[in-house]
Length: 415
Image (cartoon, rainbow, N blue to C red; front, top):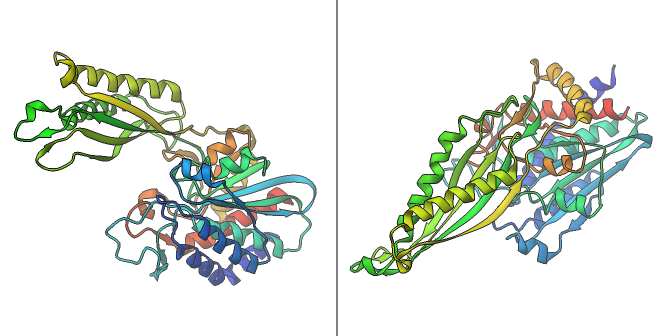
């Protein structure tokens, strides 16, 4: 019997335990915001200890966490060293998630299993890969085979806010520098590139007034509408700019949150909205931001034209996030080839190497010259997973097979 077959058998024999591990992780909420994620890290470390895996707890200083608008972050590293030589492979998954929102037919923290699917917030993105990576590592070590290099589990808690307090913080502190890395993903493709993301907060200031005498105020909402229309018009232009990376189409802009006004009978004096601009790998982030600021400035100037100074709107722009795109690094080929080979064997179909329109904290490893890919347990598309929507779910057979793919890949890389 080959080592690959032995790995598969071990994972099958321990799969119920793997599912229970994932259920325990889902039952500890990590809604971000507010971002009180340290309790989940503590629970994860306890569960890992039960498997004989000692997790280093790296608490990010409270002042840094609060400056990011979060409450608590403790990142975990499990280090396993084998023989001299060889490469250290990091396996990264994030535990922070967006709040569940409305429309669920299953308890978002119940981790219910129905018709072979596990339901819950972070079931697919990406607490599932806490389980994938942990049990792939345990399967690898069950072989008792001579290995070279090492494996590190990086379980972090800042992906939703950009990753700088998660893997970015671990890397900046010099706490890790692996040779290769695999980050949480889905099972039917190995992702080698992804979009960048620019998020900005735009505040439109006018002047409140009684709705019975609106001429005495400056309607910030009316001004915001002009700015928003100018921004939305950019999406038509973005469709003319196509990426050459398979799986990535074109840039786009989304306004995901807006608030303002005081009451129904008051001319709104302030409106705040937040935008998300996805950047294809070919774009320059500095140029993208400068262009958006120009579009906003032109819309404001158009609104104010011909108005006296005391009837004009003023706009403030704050950058919230700048996440660079990830481009493939040449050294990622051993990862890509191993995952594609074993993925095709276990899933019965080719596993393409491609890009994704998402952005992830994998880019932070790539920016430090660490080749990486995105691969883990999940369906063919984000839409199928219901990630960031109601009734997020994971097909448990995808979890089983992805765990086998990762275990086999580690055996090949460290053998």
